[in-house]
Length: 172
Image (cartoon, rainbow, N blue to C red; front, side):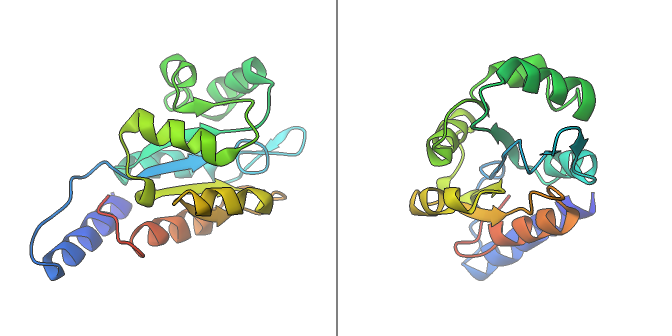
């Protein structure tokens, strides 16, 4: 609830400062990698992922998954059974919002943003590979590096939400 209020308030303040026009809500997209962001090592997962997923929904942003891993069926089962079966539904995992087995993260993100009819400049990718940063940023997306030894944290989420509100500001 608090995250939504902050996001909406920031959007409204920026919109009013720009002359009162307000962009549509729901054009922002959050994309996470799987290995090193959600899943840590062989059997652990991010301490904060189960808290962050509901916050993504509350913040009125769309969510996508992009992983280079080709262990598609195993990942789908892991996400649905271990992490969150309300986010990682069969419908989600079979849609283009969930991208598997492609090493170019920016291509995966293109498909996810298209699926949600999102705004490229209001999309942030949380990834543990610095090597993916160049393609992501050159494609117009925002990038946030995640420490692969601990996975995505509440601080990463808050930093990412802040990044969506700046340069250019997004009204999500």
